[in-house]
Length: 230
Image 1: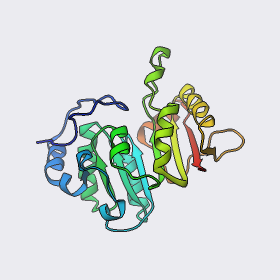
Image 2: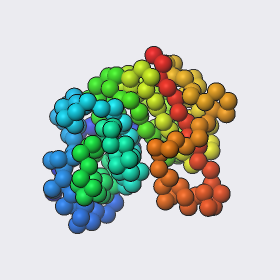
Image 3: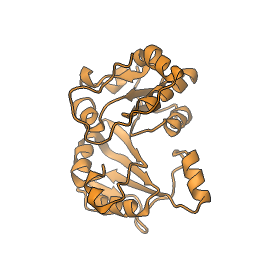
Image 4: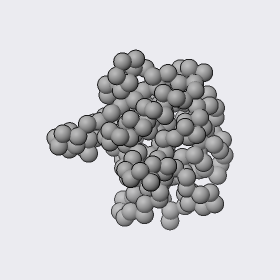
């Protein structure tokens, strides 16, 4: 039975998508959640205790089916990773794969990102914060639903260490422009790119199958890297 986090708080940063859960994913919740899952209702964490070590912390908001987060946790074993997602099949799949890969540096929340950030993540604890391919809400009347807004950024800011990186990526150019506008106006952040505003894809961010398909169709991808300066 799936126990995590769809209870009292409203969903503010995602829309829950009920998706189909395979037997393997159900098994992952039953067997892997005690080892990999983190509960919103347990309150604030101490990352060094959660992972039983001191290491740079990477947090990803909305990891989808988890392929890129899994690859990063494998490739950057010197870092600790926390993923946040509300989509049960993605959470189950990632946990299953992480157990198979015997990863000890990955934990997940199945809860709303803002609730996790506000209630569970200590200030000045994140070295790299990742927001990859969020829903762009294409229609103008829906732009207010985009997760990347000025208020959201300022709620993220205390959680990043000074010098930490907020890394965004999108395959929708109007949303990339929106991200750039929001971040250029955000107090306490500096764009790491002084010319175009957009950054080359860092080596640590894997290219997903979806992204490769988009590239074949001529779709662009825009990465933005902003450093917290205070």
